[in-house]
Amino acid sequence: MNEESLHDLIDQNAILIGRSENAKGGAVIVLQNQGVIYVRNLSFWEDDVLGKQVSIKGIIRLEKYIPDPKVSEDGAISQGAIGFQYVLDDAQWHIK
Image: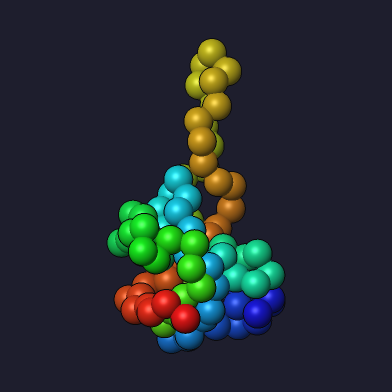
């Protein structure tokens, strides 16, 4: 699945297959094309699921999920992500 076809599924229920990984913003699914989808309300994958291929079903959203990085007055830059992120709502999964 590429970025374009993922975009076509926004606000729809979909089944995706990818690798479960943990990111600073929470649990993610890394698709075959290396696209990343955050799993809403899941802070991290448990060790028995982490790094495994999973089939995951949910509603795909495109939104500002990770805050933008900010620059302080003294020039320090906070972590963040510019732009929008794909997020999966109401996710249900199982290991492939």
